[in-house]
Image 1 (tube, helix red, strand yellow):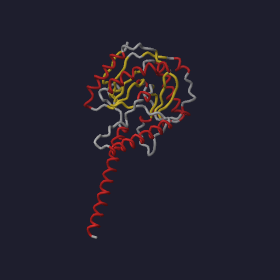
Image 2 (image 1 turned 45 degrees about the horizontal axis):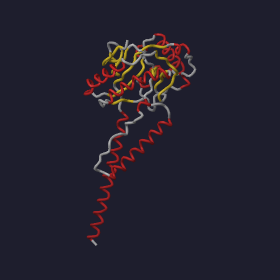
Image 3 (image 1 turned 135 degrees about the vertical axis):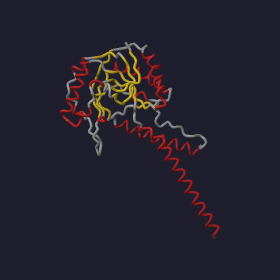
Image 4 (image 1 turned 180 degrees about the vertical axis):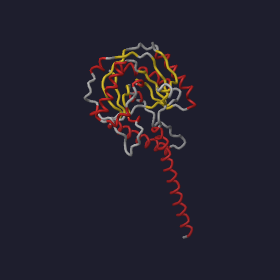
Length: 281
């Protein structure tokens, strides 16, 4: 009987050990494949706005919103910083020179593109956290062409690109479900064949280009310095939907340069720190 008890204890211990090890692998796999989503971008590429009329109209939009909800005053982008975002990046210190190389390689290709007037369409937000001005379809396509050139150049050097998050709840739910299914499928595969390591592809999506929304940021609540217990005040449609965009939509501008910027502000210029820039005209 003592021998039987010893064998039972051994088997029970072995089962618990194996189960614990398996769960740890699952935990580490899930953590490994979700931690990248919290990365904070530190560089971006943009087209600075060079039309004074458009700049003034954007300031009017900011004032219109602040009159309705003054807590959003800190969210306003300064007039000298209005731009159309092309690429948002997370760059390691060891990748700085590599990223400059990627930028200039892309610019050589972008200069070959036939440049067009940029026209605007309507106001919208990313999750009610960032208010932006979207582009007309033709201008959108033009900007996307430039983005694709930049994207290709940075991707082939393994430099992390951060994508926009829209406020479409259905898309968010679908993305979460897709990620859960992908994690489950990969875990199942790892159990079947432990000789083949699981590749980290949770954050890679063949449709990444579709997640890039060319836009001109007007306000964003990440500018707010005050610490809130819950979520920061948001920019709801009620605050801006009644603003008359007629004067703004009549205007256009032509991109005269593209800038590669650090998100930190240069105290001397009160503008973003310029890593590199390239004239288009």
